[in-house]
Image 1 (cartoon, rainbow, N blue to C red):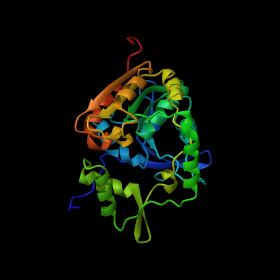
Image 2 (image 1 turned 90 degrees about the horizontal axis):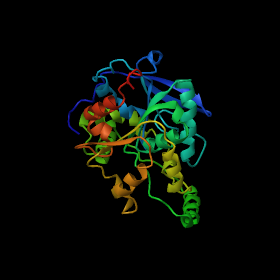
Image 3 (image 1 turned 135 degrees about the horizontal axis):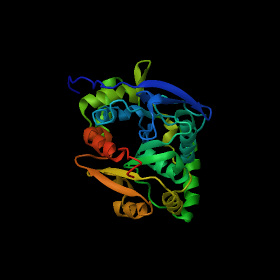
Image 4 (image 1 turned 30 degrees about the vertical axis):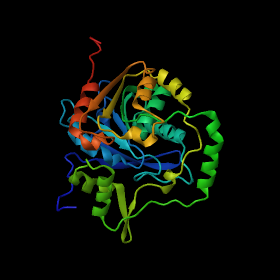
Amino acid sequence: MSSAQAYVPTYNATSTFVTVRGLKHHVMTWGDTARVTPEQPLLVMVHGWMDTSASFQFMVDALRQQPGWADRPIVAIDWRGFGLTEVPQTDSYFFADYLGDLDLLLDQLAPNQKIDLLGHSMGGNVVMLYAGVRSERIRKLINLEGFGMPATQAQEAPDRYIKWLDELKKPVQLKDYATLPEVARRLQANNPRLRESFALWLAGHWARKEGERWVINADAAHKRPQPILYRVEEVYAFLERIACPVLFVEGTETLYFMLFNGKFSREEFLERVKRVPDFRLESIEKAGHMLHHDQPEELAVHIANFLKSVDPAIA
């Protein structure tokens, strides 16, 4: 790590905590939530696996430069067991809980109001499913690289449960680090496109100091696999019920599909999303899976254009 300085946010967030389902959830807020209107609703953002709400700071700063976004209220939440949100008393995490948390958080963050909703990666998959059952709460939805997972077959279920049962008997832990710059180097190893200044700033939100070591702000139990199969037929049913406009943004250099060794392809993803009634796909050059880190300025343009208000008189 060179002598580079950590990124300094242009627009600082305030941190609050909202208790739902017995857990204190951390919420980052940019702007005054009392200023929301039907034309410019609250933008709610949810992060991906092994990430935090602070991950969106670079994109928020870029969004603030877009017309109409100077003071529009934005919030981002930490999922259960990530960031500063409390860790539940559990040894495993289940996908449905993210939808349950989101639904009740929205009851408090935007009661009786439609929102604009954005999710990245795992968060993108959560918001797509949520839109399939709560579309009436969403004006527009943005999915950043939440492609989904490989389809599974029923006969895989017993082995999946065996793997889960075996994993429950094994201790899990996350690596800790001697210094904050070491955490930053880890972030850059995960994503070589991450600017050094971004990595140094994000490291302080991705980890906390305990004693002489820096510890990742995530529950190690997230590493355990879920026993429940990814049933693509059920996903189809959710996608077909999405009644709000959806923008999907991908990085042209994403390596996401390489994770599955041919079991899931971009072509299969494109076939799935044909079921979404109002769906558009846009791409960003020189960006990978963490496109909100790689190209936050360009991503902000895509988001602002999609979320432009429409005059009801000409709609």
